[in-house]
Length: 95
Length: 315
Image (cartoon, rainbow over all chains, first blue to last red; front, side, top):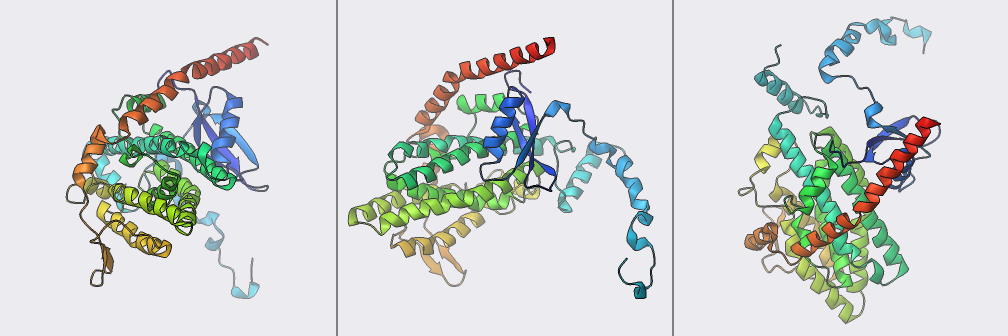
């Protein structure tokens, strides 16, 4: 990133009560206050949300794509973590 | 499997074939990255420069209803520029670099914005035709293989659906008004029709980037396919208004199931691309003026934020 650019922020929006905040996009701002104001103007022009989180991008720790196999493959061999792995007679109905 | 270039490229292609999106930290060929930076930043620049011909009419909109609609549309274009710049930045370029490329004239933006908006009817024609053509292209790009670009496009398409309707309503009001108003609408249509067709870019045979972009699934349809869809969609819209598209060769082709249309003046297209359009110089001048005169605001905001952070630390 060029030195002249303002810091980059990630924006998360809760679209309505009861739902998670979801990543909406990113923007540049000098500080958290401006990031919040810009997020409102850029990402909620049509009532898209009732709550905003802004996080400076450099503070996010992300997994490395190349580690994907190592991190996630093990779960593929564990079908017994899912309900359909267990046989229950139809007569029992929904369980 | 060892991470040789061949293996990485094969893995990359396998993902594209399986319709798995490419994300910022994934390995990608340099040329794919460069193509995307060029295309996404050009797209962003087009949104930003696109604010100029329309902004020209905000203070002179004929009613409050028209003014708030146009204001909201121009504000959207600014937002769309920002979504796209952000998407391009995930590929390793910077906002500052992109602005520099735009302001110096190195980067391109859609040539359509190098035409002037001479009368209020032009604002109708721009919304109806220019946004109509852009939406045709952008709906396709919601399925682009690069995740951040596709996601920006989804948001943009959702927001832009009002832009074209806004333009059509303006044109309709004029077409159904006095003879002078109808004449104004026809005159705007005459001037914007051909440049709108050129927005889809050179014909497939001439297009340098098309084939590779299709193989990479950045594009899903060719320039000519998109242009044909636009013509087919627009002809009945013009007929409804009682306006005439300025093309004597335009007629329904039963066999193809499409409208045939006349030859596009590609000399004009290339002349405008290369800087010889009616407004190229003026657009860049205005962009540079805004950027340079805003420099002190950007610097002051940064200095203020740094001072605040310092004060917080000391408390």
